[in-house]
Length: 458
Ligand SMILES: Cc1ncc(COP(=O)(O)O)c(C=O)c1O
Figure 1: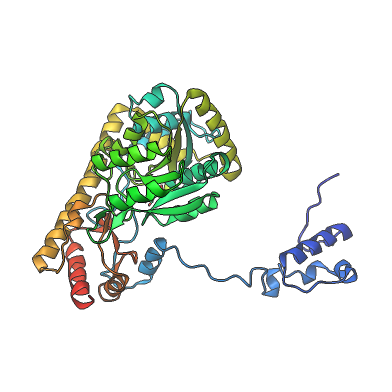
Figure 2 (figure 1 turned 60 degrees about the vertical axis):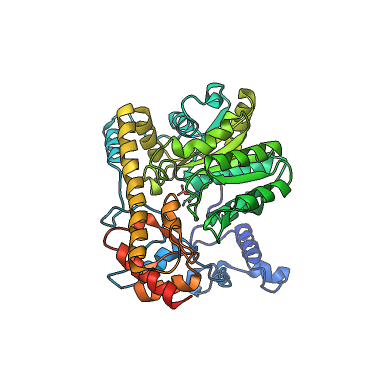
């Protein structure tokens, strides 16, 4: 039998009409129950899904709140002031305040466009094989025992967020302990991503507002009292939002405790190379956990370090105990990805693979990456110096001690609101500023605003 299609305006078969009426009834849970006779006489004309009637099956929906981070940009865009400064969004800006496409990325794209042998076919569910291998090598190191022993299952995902989501969903289905511990505070999306993956989300202490540094004692105490085998989300480097990372010695204490309690590390690496300007240095924490032979998950993003924000390129790697397990893990990861996105996108992953597999392009990338990291580091110094020059009350040394894209200023939400109102400076209400949005032109405006905020609103 040919499938029945509903043509707008065409007379309906009685059975199709009945099906539509039934559907409408299900979509309108609050409408009063109707009799069978009323149902059978219901026609398309009475369907509230028709726009001409000016009503909607979604009429009862409440307006959802803006995302706390992306909402900053929404407010910024509405501000007509020519002096406005957006320090909310975690994206790199040049000294001129412009977004940056890396030269090496432009070159890779040109090569891809000029290659007549390239098609736009679907990728396999696991993504581009070269990209996956090179991504694992980038984060774990070329000499990683886990890679040499084929114990790593890698799948291409939609940037860091997609990698966390696929990893979370996999754990929700296949791991015996469904509680994930995330740092307090952390990137706001972690809670939602893992809760939607079917995991129970709990926090561990991470940041000490008194020292504006790591609360190692609280961190270790909270992991000690967490259940054996719990999943622990760790920021590989450049912790967002605090900019506070454990030292190598502190990482070692965390590693020993976690391994002694058979906890499963889930690393989030959104800033490899961005923190220090050195890709290997920023992967040190992860490599310590791989070197001990234990298992872990790794979510990788190329948004920041290659500036591929909108291309949504990332990878999820699961380091397993044996090659045999890694093979089965990969087979199950395919079952997670297929109904979510079917298969990942080709273009961004091709750019990354082109750069990572060519030694000369790889080198160019590291130079450009270091230049971005260095500019951010120099903005830290400039902001610190500007506050010192103004005699702004307080100890601001955390600005130069913290690492990566963000500084957790310690400003209160009232002070943040004041700076928006009076100085047109936009940041998240927790006082986080993106150092990448600062430049020689706006750093004094920011220092003036901070000075005014802390002296006028204590
Ligand atoms: C800590 C952390 N994880 C993950 C992400 C995800 O980024 P994306 O999905 O754009 O790769 C971000 C982005 O800001 C982040 O800061």
